Image (cartoon, rainbow, N blue to C red; front, side, top):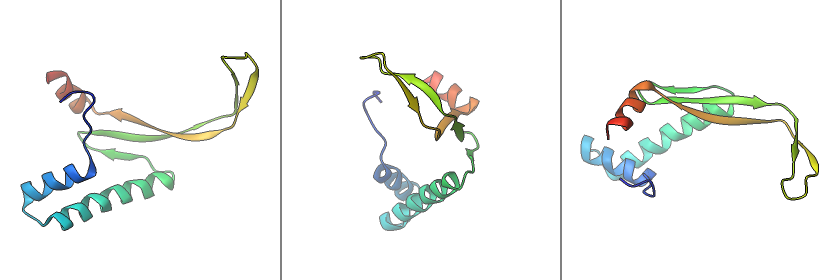
Length: 98
């Protein structure tokens, strides 16, 4: 797979359909339910860890001063919460093999 390819929800649902033999509608509903649960957990401030895959971490960034690179004018950057992904060692090893 090239770096320009993207795995979509529909493709994940199709893989579940083929692997488990459940209907396409049920497999798509399963994918949506999992993603919804992850979104709910992250929006309520919880980190999400998927064993063997990685961890979605929330981090609060404080207010800081940034600089407009074009004009050089200093601009305050407001505090915000950002999400990062840290891949598990198992995933890193698997990616390095391919």
